[in-house]
Length: 78
Image (cartoon, rainbow, N blue to C red; front, side):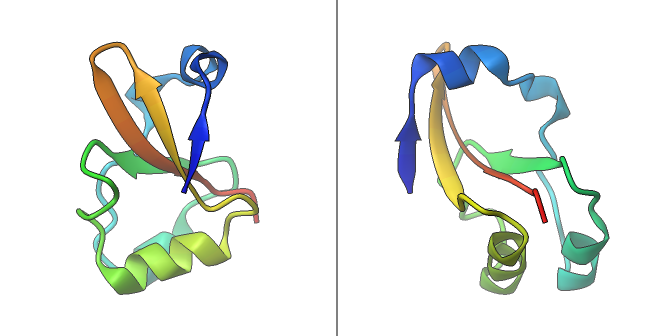
């Protein structure tokens, strides 16, 4: 995972982050531009779902520090 700077945290609207993806099929249905993540290092997603999300991302998982929070997010751009 790469660490993103404060600028990335300021630019991200944390209210739009998808925090639950239950199945691989659900991960495949998410539109390009979706941001998925959690405050637990990504461990709330099954390995299969995390792998599918990684296939849909150019940059993979990123840790982003926000005010009093640390999010692990993935940007779907494929």
